[in-house]
Length: 320
Image (cartoon, rainbow, N blue to C red; front, side):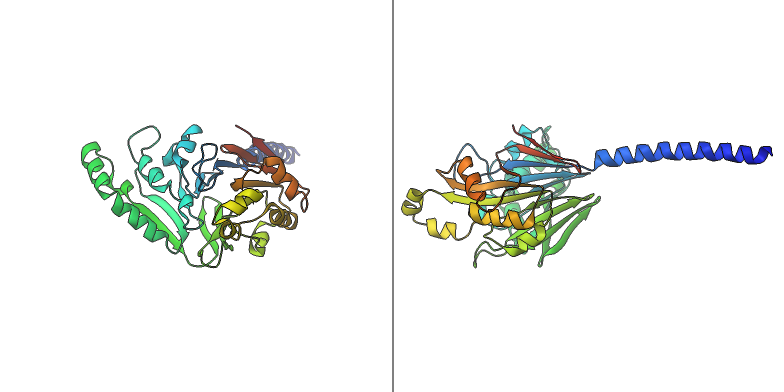
């Protein structure tokens, strides 16, 4: 009669211990189930001081991923005290210069022996076909700099290069530590190809980065029920449209607030955010009002260094 009692006692202890361990595991899982997104740069090619060039940082689990590397990306990273060496991979959406004119700075500043550098391996670079050409060109352009720094500063030779992964077609193009990145084609103009957007997924959370595009149903399909949809936008006043010679061509390659509103209403993200703002004499209030003609959900106009902390329960917006 005593044996069953002992077994039952052991079973109770086992169940109690198991529940305790499950509680810990669940707590750790909940804490890890978060995605941090930082708008490092929300600007356009314009040489303005209020917005850095296009660059979006996504931190999920053990992965720190940078999407586009526009002007001042390194400066913006260090404003957040994030060393460049922390970046696991850089992704390019297309080959307009404003989306990668900060790449050389990112690559080389992350290599030098400082608290914001110290990368000891090649910089990983992912993008559509043509990305290898950019990396090879930069390696050639800065070859003398790299030779000098290796000899004079004893920097690791391997880190003076790129490790490039090109893809030819859309789909999952990156998987590391439970984080997946999916590329999808977008329409940035007949001659501006390739052009892609990206979706990042981690533990049931997701962020979509539109890249440069006009209204595109492929973007809608990639964004349905995403947590955070980061979208470009163009809005110029009538005077600028009349006086800037290339205004019509530029407008034909971007999304108006009204078109973005249609995309948001179809995709229904938990939060929509504007970035890569190609705007002239247009206030944030006007952008939102024009978007509201088609979309009534959560919406924010992004600014440099704005952060989003995404969890299953909420999306916290941190405004610098």
